[in-house]
Length: 178
Length: 273
Image (cartoon, rainbow over all chains, first blue to last red; front, side, top):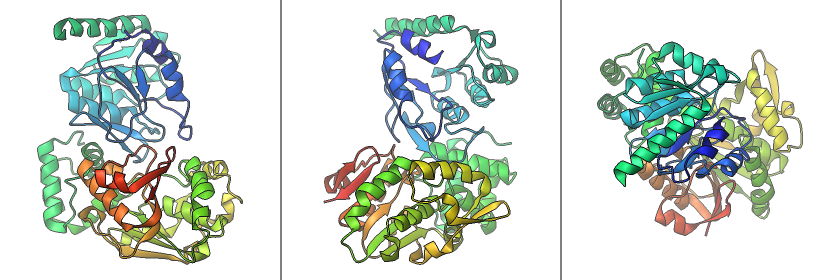
């Protein structure tokens, strides 16, 4: 699903894409390489305090929480697991909601626990746009359903619809900003 | 329940703590600082930030609680096994000719880094001639690091890491089971010394070190405090001494960059010129 989205985004996609994914803690290598192969955009795991640039895909590194800081940089932490996870989706989403407010699109894909639900709520509370993958389409639908339960999520989209939507946002933005 | 901390409230809390206990969090990275204060507020059931600031200013026990909450970021024993392999295979041999190896583990916190290091040194026959200094903000925190007491539940992960490190023995050789806890062998602590000092205030121990183990400490600082701290570490290294930082950290200051050469880019090991 994630691979599909990354492979279908316009190659000049102009927004930063920030991904927090539940992954094995002790395997540092491989995932970002696999995503890079499919992605049309530069894809990397950020270092602590790395600047967030447009048109780049960022993947939370193994065994670190990944926050967004005011000033548009990442910061990493080894704090305790949240929702049994490090990286925890909630921490990334909540910090992004605080920094980007109504400029943020929060997307929650299929997954096996409730991590991300509170983060999506925070994005909604700060005026951001929220989208979940259609639970009917999900291999494991716990994550999108948990978000739908506690937040009035703006859109429930299939993968194809989500890709079309993101590219549309990008193209409209391009028209406006030149 | 407190969910979010606005900047103004965060400042109030930072000021209350700084004015009363000389503990300055103003150069800490903001997002993780906020997260830790919010989780602390909920733990002690004070959901109004203004009240939390006021109470922290007056109640030293509450401040001690905050400090403990702040300074024990959990890692794990032998976190990043490839780092420990790199340390054993390419750094320890550099110490072969030294009569005495001086090592500094700043901000010892949960003690995971210390105990992993002691085991690695012991397996390389370096422990008996290595002085390890651990430093932290107060005695209580240092004791926690020294205790070598971890949950049995965490030993499975630790044993997996140890196996990937390709340790010489079994991790169980280093601890005894006491109820729910694994008690690591205090014989390993023979050459460990402690010193109370405030890293964030720029305090450093006397003497110089052949190795400073500072992984994932400075990710909790903003750029300016990171740069300052890296510079201090750099000054405290012996010539050709080695600094380890976390695998997602960078040396950011010009001065430190001029003096430190990357010797293992994957594991972020640097040697001082």
